Length: 280
Image 1 (cartoon, rainbow, N blue to C red):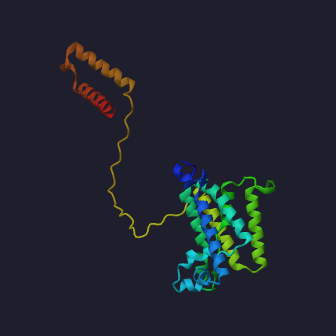
Image 2 (image 1 turned 90 degrees about the vertical axis):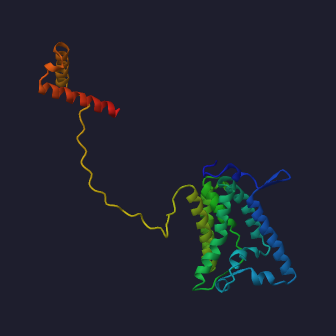
Image 3 (image 1 turned 180 degrees about the vertical axis):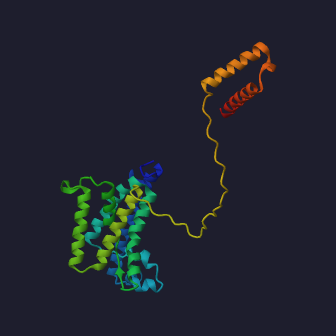
């Protein structure tokens, strides 16, 4: 078990290929690499099928074409930026997967992939939003930096500072070019990645809601009688001496020699001894 409580097999590769470990992060990168080839071919042969049916468009999604929430990331024209994104997925995604386990890694990446179209759909109720080719690679680096904040990156910069610097630079770029959609996607994906990892680390817990369940009925119980005061743990010394004297009198003269008062004291002492025996 790892520190997040996932089974050990969750941290193992999905498969081995030629002695090389293949993780879920590699398979995700492979899907997007194939999408680059397919997008390139459709652009070369002037086939507009992908451009017409796959990108996200809030107006079309709200009109019923909900598959665009899932397919928007499959339209990827070739670019140098995309190459770095694939490297980020393979490198940082693999390290995150090794730590949190495959199932939680897939949950992390599913949130990264879906948070942008879901936010855009909500904003699309007022302002039309469009998106294509968002694969969330940078958010995986944010998840890595959250897990390993003191990992040393290029130029001896710690991962936490590299993450803050890059988020700041990308934010300034989006503001400079009035790219509100890019700014929302940046903060949405990075915020999700950070919050997901911190939640799994136990930094905070989500509130639990129980809908449709009635609260238990309360019953008014009658007042219970007050408990009697606890008796002393031992019979007072004077009483013990008194009881010893009564026992000596019985040994010398018999039980009939006791007065009524002496019999009462002896019975009380016997009752006290029985209560002690029952309480053990």
